[in-house]
Image (tube, rainbow, N blue to C red):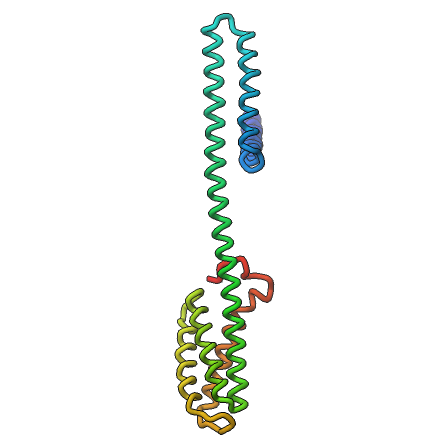
Length: 220
């Protein structure tokens, strides 16, 4: 007896699971793929057939109006619920699409700023090696600008972007005093350390994009 009840309960659970899954698929199909006009047309057609069937089965007008009225009210309520669900679902889909597009555009802008910052830093580094101090200062100014954009899009937890901007600003002041083609006294190891640190962090942030990730996701 216990085994029979166990098997029966298992069958009931499976049937209920299949029923809910089928109902979910049917509702999803109705809300996503069907035109509301078609739903109304189907509603009217079903109720015309049902009303005619009720008129054939019932013995009096009172019974006919009771059965037909109950059926029309019930199906109308179900149709209204489905249309309300459709309206809410479409609003959610639109909101999700807008959020995804905003995240995608934010990711694209983030990648653009990273690449521009890397280019500006490399240009500043090469200008320092070539003793072109005005070009080095211009490259650092551009680097600071793009680091500011990067920091506003995705601030680092350790505030490293802000620290890099402050260091770059100090080096801008240092290189401003140099004359192109002439040697300038500065701390070479400290400058190289800044270049390597900034390049490493930029390359780390660009790595997900280079592997086909990060474009459609929020960089934070």
